[in-house]
Length: 284
Image (cartoon, rainbow, N blue to C red; front, side, top):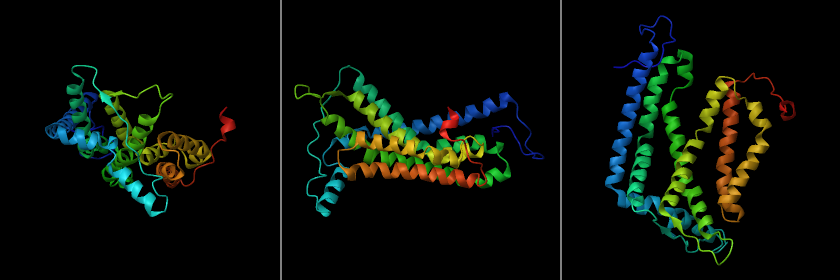
């Protein structure tokens, strides 16, 4: 079996590897990860009708789970149809002969990546793990589980909340009644993919902060100092992608804000005795 990254454990039976050995080990980790993505992509491609009609196009249907739950919630709290969605006036076209065929491969590849994500990170962790000390390994125990959990939570959040709000907003937005919104299928898919996968990546923020705090780049005081700016950014994002009602905006705002607060707590626990960072004015 190929050995992974350089050995920092003095006295270990594993000899320190050369740069070429590192590249060889990395190559095999990447190859196995690509194979896992390919296997997932084959599964998605074999079931393309389901994945396109029910998954990719889901947020464009009035009967999408998020819309039905919000409408039911609206009636339950006495708001009537205030949060119920009207018909989505979304029209998609294909302007290139091969666009739909190529979109099938895009959907298959992205789906394969999402399905294989835990294995991909496991391969990455196998490459990095030998470089860590015993103390660092104890502190990162269960990292594969937490990274995967945060990723899939972000995927679900992006797909069931951000994506439908975004689709609804841009489908209904128009500068003039004389202008009709007609989008290409490739543009629609690119936006859905970037939103959903991007949110999965954003939900890695607590773990990113953990590692940045470990090396001293980020501190809890730094995050607290710029908390107000982070909250403003989150509020702006929520206001743009959601309908103009407070409840919908809170549904998007609260999880993102909690994610930031969790990151502060993690940074504080990593460096409990940290010094106060400079105020914003001192950075200018």
